[in-house]
Length: 537
Image 1 (cartoon, one colour):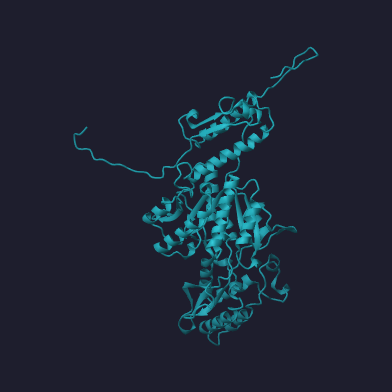
Image 2: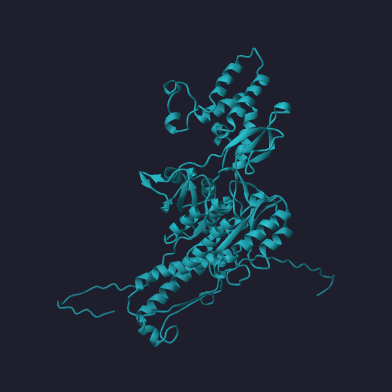
């Protein structure tokens, strides 16, 4: 401490610092979601390609609007859809016999972002960044749009995870591969985030052969990424059947597109004739409802809060009110709405896993594996993986591990894998090791910014070492580092002759060496049982 020259006799008090400056740990679970939104405006400000932080689902809806409403139509049983992208919902038939209809999902346009963010918050999500790379009016998911969104978030400080659930909707595998490689490259470049990847075409998997095909395509597709980037990549399979969209969330307008309105009216008219034969007066009331198809009002809060007589035109129903009225009088419609909701609830796992990461970090620490846990809102995986099938997923020859989400008897669906895409590396094979190292690196880096241009002297070196050791001691005490004592768990060095030469000091380089003993999971637990003979030692 420098000596102060006092000029007046008296008693003077000084309070020198007893402890080094503290390092405050950075946030570890802040996803950046990139995809398509209903709108991208907030109080008149255009949010297209503008990274925007949110803290709740309500916050998302206020800035980016509600989710995408998929389109359906009815088709007489036996007929094929006009477009190969249109999917028949095979486990549903509306009515029976000659009047039977099958439900077809148009498949022309679809978007996953809204429901994936809903899953994120349903699994404990907190703050997140949103990048809208286009609205639903864009017409379809585009590789260029997603890459533009990825570029927009590149230099933003704060995100620790990249999540693009709309990437699996790209029709061409090569487009998906470019987005996935772009995510990995950004993580390698920034070194402050990981990429949570979905598997392209996972929705088509129905057997082991199909699984091997899509997993193989995924692994070969990301072969263009630098090998070092794989340590920042985390992939999950299969897709999830969720309960994000409830039957009540489906609107009758989903079934009244240009190709389906006349067919829907004809089908419902036949149903009414069967259910309410003349002279049942209810038939006229329901016929009036059927006549409103294609003419009902949008489901805005303003309309919903307006009494029926005051609406323009008078007594006009909203889409949702009309759907409720028809379902109440034609029970088969309830089943149709249920199957429509079920088809929208098939989602890639990345959004849910971002929430699982957040909950794990908050409750147990980033050094714990985000595995052996359930997923809120998950009904079941779309494909049932057994132990043998998971062997290649978890320990593949080329090292690009894909983490499984499996269903276990009595325990239900669980996340059953915690490996990065660099699974052959002893340093970086585990998710929690990679993410803990990012946490330590970024926390220390942020704290050391205050020492830029400080004198490169022993006083500064001692302060820096003490500061880092104090931070790491707290991490070790919480269970984030392995070792029976602090000396076994970590080591920090900084000084002339140990980490720096005289030339380093002359060139303005202060070099700090930090050695950590990371926590690894007990991934394979082997029990050995022996029988002891009577009277044996």
